Length: 293
Image (cartoon, rainbow, N blue to C red):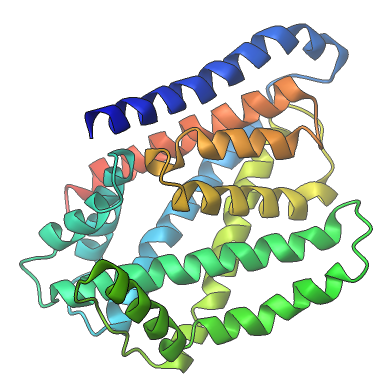
């Protein structure tokens, strides 16, 4: 276990060390590009991400209500924001254990907490896949038959969120882990109307990311759909990755690989690192403020 933790830390260090190495080697290229910090766009990016994290708390509130948990709105926000800090601890359980601890004194069971959390992550993940698929329409690619594949994803995602389908996969996990798991009893119609919420959620996330890039260099607003898709799918891959806590390093590496197709490498690296710093700072800010609730 100690060796595994050491390897994970070394991996994260390696990713960031490589990014800084590439930034150092390509720094001189910045003189050839229109690189100048625009504080107005940076301020707009921060405001956009502040709204984005408010949506994150509202999203969890929606799912707590869907499983009939009776918890005050502000207490749900506190549980969401404070427990989120557990994402940066190795292992995927700390966030959920944190929510169970913070909500233990309210009219909601452990099963309801786990169900609401699982539903939130499932719809959030499916929303990011759908947003990324739609964004491919704006890439300079010869999509051809892939356009039909993209739109085929829409009914597949709508089908996948059906409680029976979700419970089927939960049953498979139960067999593999030999543990008693939760069963989703939320109505299908209730889950469907939460999908547009997370499409909007990813749109705001991508818009904030675009504003960070725009604060560093000129980039056409027509690239916004592509940037939304890039940041949403990179978040998902980082989230499901067991390599690093909170997708740390994984997300930054993927984002850089994507963004160098749209802008010079040093600007892409600066944008990615700036995004991580701002998002982490806002996460911490929301967690600290919610402790007062």
